[in-house]
Image 1 (cartoon, rainbow, N blue to C red):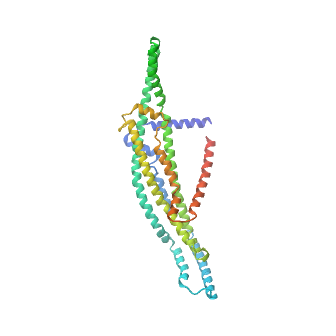
Image 2: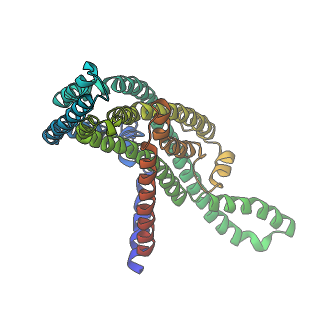
Length: 385
């Protein structure tokens, strides 16, 4: 247990040292990317998710031969039922119903182009919303760099004030001890009124752990948002891949009258799942607008503390700010958490556009399973610490 506590203390001290350094202007962006990633959503993982989706979709014909064989069997059964009905006189000869199995068989034979055709409108929506998101995210990322520079200026000003108060404390202690016996009580009272606030300010300006705690809170908020985004995109990839690979069986089953609606149900679910990307990017764009407002709001507040160039610190306001315990106004962290919550509404919004069943219930099952895994991880982490 002592070793764990020692390692945790060393880690905290190392983090404080990293956060307390003063990088040059050219290194500020690299420092922020090193600590929190190259953006609110890391471009490497987003690129991986796109490539992963294309890689899995390339295996659309994994069960295509089995579906063809099943479709041939169902066609024989279908024509046998139709022939018996016409022989018994229950129905007359109708050409169009007899052509339906051939049309469904053609869908299975041309399964790749057919799925691309169905997914094309949803890809248009996704591309349009992704462009909107990318343009807004570029603004947000620039604001993040400016905000981090101002936060660093605040920390440096607090360090400077802390050092000044420590020097003043030592000088006041020396003078206070030498001159205390030769002053009257009135002067002693005046000295106490001057020195006591100075020492109080010194204690309040202990910024090392405050800066560490602030950075950890922001890192936690941004990673909660990232996990929500990555989970939604992974759900979309998994669901769409399963629908593509096993979809030919739904087409083959719809040849039989008892499963006539299976093909149309598959199309509705496939379109609904493929809309996840477009809806997700749209929500990320809206959340980007909220992030832009939150970042601008905090930048204006930090500017009031240290000035436009970060060199004109207001001692009184800095003391109030440091007394809050966290070197952040909290707006950006709250916006990150709101964005994470909004991301989990993507499956429900998709069913509003293309009405289907099963998707929301599957997503709910996934969420319950994720909650179970998270609870187990929390218990394991608690037992470790």
